[in-house]
Length: 217
Ligand code: BG6
Ligand code: MG
Image 1 (cartoon, rainbow, N blue to C red):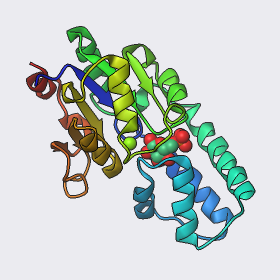
Image 2 (cartoon, helix red, strand yellow; image 1 turned 120 degrees about the vertical axis):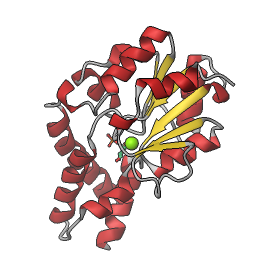
Image 3 (cartoon, protein in one colour; image 1 turned 90 degrees about the vertical axis):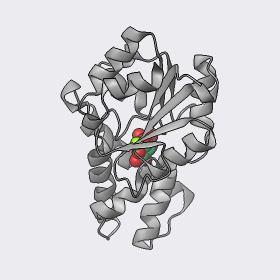
Image 4 (cartoon, protein in one colour; image 1 turned 180 degrees about the vertical axis):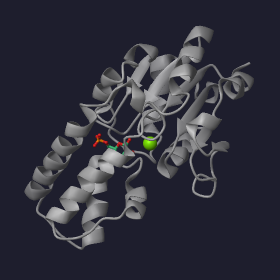
């Protein structure tokens, strides 16, 4: 089946926001009295905000009431927002702007499929909102990745069948979601971690316009 649509994850695929999520979660961990390493941060990639907090609290062996959890998620997000509100186009990952432009010119349908509730703000601050024909973010879905809901809804909004869609993802949970949605998946990152993806590239600079052209024809 020819591919006619590309669904992009946001964090770690279009923008390098993982570093800001890390700084904000580490600040919270330190406040709660424990350390949080970059290696541990890998566990939070692609995972919803509430699930990320649960993983963090597990690492620190801290238990909180629901009210405290809400308060700490709010604080973490305020801190994260202080970083992302200063973002600009220089923080788009290599080749992503060119790829979006290229797909748009070819008439390929483009969607966002992100777990983030801050996705629209990031698309706006980096000035790429207009490339997207559909935006599905953490405010629009009930089930977080690895559930395929986010990608299935994106395909539906684009009026495409899942087998016409290519998903670009950096998280293991996202690759699983794409596979369960019966979509072709392109992983960005470690081949071992993303081994279930149809194709894997070490970084976005290796994901060329020519490569996607071959899939789209
Ligand atoms: C995903 C990130 O895209 O969005 C996760 O990979 C993050 O690390 C999740 O937790 C939710 O993001 P936000 O912006 O709604 O807190
Ligand atoms: Mg991601």
